Amino acid sequence: MPRQERGERRVADLLGAAEQLFATAGYDATTMSAIAKQAGASIGSLYQFFPSKESIGSALLRRYMDELGERLAQWQKTLPTSLDVFGQELITVAYDYLSQRPACRVLAETPSLVPKSYRMEKLSVSVQALLATFVPQMTEAELAPIALAASMMVRAAMQGSRLLDEARGKSLRHEMQQALGGYLVARLGPQVAPRGKR
Image (cartoon, rainbow, N blue to C red; front, side, top):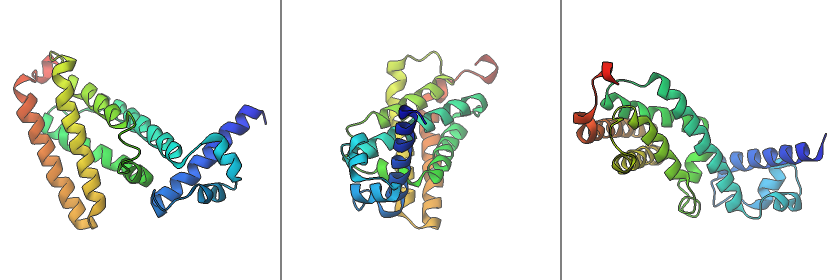
């Protein structure tokens, strides 16, 4: 196996081990030694690729946001025609993705990782691209704060769901879906072109 391929495989193994530990033990409780052990690697090998736990968390969070962005881009092909349904389904799409990536929720709530990254900005940009299909006449500058607010509402729904038991989390998601749908209708509804003109 070529050296570069071995290195890529080792990085994938290390990230996979970190992902599993972050999801089960949490970010703070996970150590570099535990990640190396879980991956079947030496601690020196881990430090060769990742100088800190923060760098591993950042790499994973970057991957998650890229994947979620791709999922949202795919969703653009079948977007609902109304803003209220769009807002509701946006939370569903994000929730479905995060259900498959439990470590993403943990990392997205880790203060040392989020402020230093482009992650929330990337989600906001993805949401903005989707919203632009409803209001193509709006400028990026006009749409950006609305997309940011929408992406923060998605994040709040995800965080709240994680902190509550299943029944209350489901109820919260429903309320956040209604809130986001209503917000988008209030902010953009009058400017949305009729379906046939979009």
